[in-house]
Length: 209
Length: 67
Image (cartoon, rainbow over all chains, first blue to last red; front, side, top):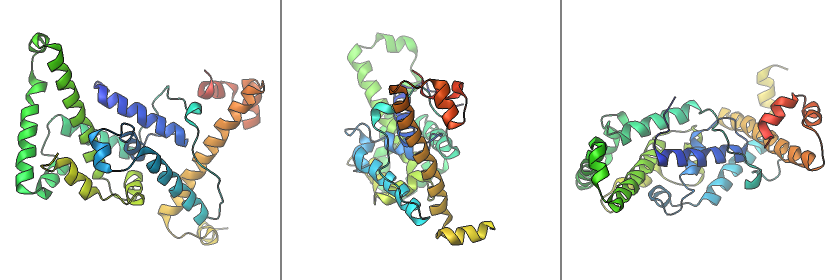
């Protein structure tokens, strides 16, 4: 089982649970993780994706309706009103969602030599890659700091660190999601939204970040 | 009817579409269920009555929707 120690991860999984419940899914899948990343429209991942939550939900519902029509079933509107959604318990993860979380955790912990990390570095332009790497190097010492060192920091600095860590965490979630290929539900949803994973990856890892 | 006849009958030769449709039916069932369980509770149905109507146990209904 994946540990939910981190705040950002917990928040994201709560939002993903809400999406799974809203749709009536029994398992938490990659598409729910993608929708969860859109809950905070000001977050880096949401801006990099360039779509809003409502459009993404609508696109997901439209995929369902189209599939039903293809097998000869006419369905009305999809999606429950938020008031009827219970988010008390997180549903079990699909195997796709599990591998996305694993990959996210690996990347957030600095296990850089995973397949996706190598692939991403290869695709980056040389300058962008250097800058991103140096940014990551600046941030990795955070995790190695002792508790006493952290206690001596002023409150504001700790808060800033937390915010920065959170942003990196959610970015890694998205980077992990972008490696999914159709027929993975998240990949299907991105395709339906006409979002190009390569462009999103470039926006997330490029020098202008 | 053999399974292959059925896929021909319902019109999509693409497993991605067919499997998506199955998921969508399940989701639709969950959504309709949640709506009507809420309505039944509003109108005073017991968990036992709701469970019986759906062919499941009172306990599972209460666990799923109970506050």
